[in-house]
Image (cartoon, rainbow, N blue to C red; front, side, top):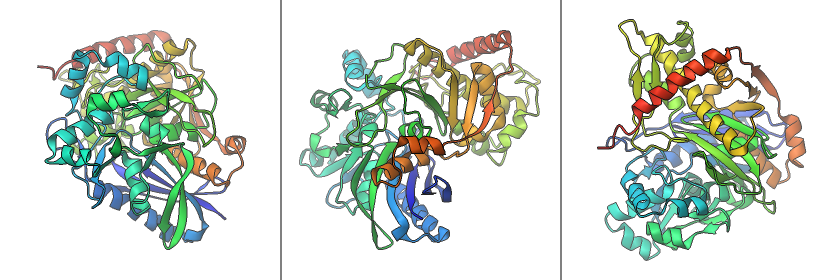
Length: 495
C-alpha cells in the first residue's frame, strides 16, 4: 500500500493526514499552537512554532500509523493563505513573527493606496480588492518597521514566503524557495493574467523581486524532503481554500463549495476566464496540475467563522468544548431577537470594511447565554448567505446546492440553519478533511498514484444532505434583521 502525506498548516493548528490509495484516512494528528496578539487588531504566529508543530505532527503520524517512510509516495502541503513570513536567506531565521492574514495593522497602508487611486489597477491585475488581508502590505510593513530589514532585502539577503513556501524551504533544507499559483494569487503582487510577479505592483509596495519565490503549478514536483532517512517528493501545493475546492471535486465551471474553518470561504470554479466580480468577490486562481490550462475561481471570504465559537469558548467561557455550541444552540427555540456580527477583524466579502467591529444587538433583560450562542452559530450561516447571494449575482444563475466542509460542517444545527437560510440543499461529504484530501489528490495525481480526475470523482461520496424547511417569509424577515445588525457594526473603528 502506498500513501500520501498531506500537511495541513492552518491558522490555529498544524495537521498531518496520511491518505491511502483508496483515499481513506489511515492516520491523522492535529496540534494547536499559540496565537500572538501584540496590540488590538494585530495577529501574529511564531514561524518556528509553525515549523516545529507541523514537522512534529508529520513524524508522529508516521510513527503512530506503523507506515514506513518508504511507503509514502509524495507529500502535499496546504496552508493558511496570505500569512506573511520574511526570513534571512543565510541564517534561515525569521526577521519578525509571521503576520497572520487576520491582522489589520496595515489598514493605513491600504487606505493610502486607495486615496492614491490604485484600487482599480490592483483589481484588474490581481483580481483582489485592496485590503490589509493580503500579503503585500504585510511585507511592506516588515521592511519598513524591522531594523535593517529593507537594507538587507535590497541586498538580496531576505526571502519572503507564505506558509507553504516556508515549509517547502524548511523541508528541503533551504534548497527550494517556491510557491504555487494559488498562493501567489493571494499576495496582491501576482498578475493573474500573465501568471508572473508584477513589476508595477512590486514598485507600489516597495518589495524587491529578489525576495519572491519561484511560482509553479499546484500539482508539480517541487523538491525532495528527508522523511526518516527517505527522500520523498513534495508534489502538491495549494492554498487551503483552493485545496478544498479540488478536494470537493469541483472541477467543472459553476461548481462551488464552502469551507467552515477559522473563517468561511466560498469558492466557485469559473473556468479558464478570470472574470472580475462586480459584487465584492475576489477572482483567484484554482488548483491545477502541471501542463493543464490555468483555471480560476470566484471567492467570497468571511474572516470570522469557527473563530467565533473559539472566542465564546476561550474568552467568554460560555462552554468548555467547541462541540458544545450545538447543544446550547438547540436549548432555545430562537435567538430571542439577538444578532451577532463577528467583525472582530473587519468585514470581508461582500462589504470589505476594515473598520467594522464585532457587535451583539437585540439584547433584552431576558437574553440568556444560549441565545447568544445560537445567534453566533446563525451568524456564520448569514455571512455565508451574503457570499452566495453575491456569487449568484456575478454568474447570473442560482447555485443548485452547496457542498460544505471544514470543522464546523460537523455541527448539525449550523448546517440545518444554513440550508434554511439559503433555501438550498447543503451537501456534506463522507470525508470531512477535504482540504487535506484536495492537496493529497494533487500530489497523488502528480506522482501517478491515481490515474486521473475521473478516478478521484468515483471515490468521492456524500455523508448527508441537509434540506431547507424554513418558509420564505421567515427567511426574509431574519435576513432583514441581519442586514440591520451588519449596518450597526460598520465603520466602528474609523475615528
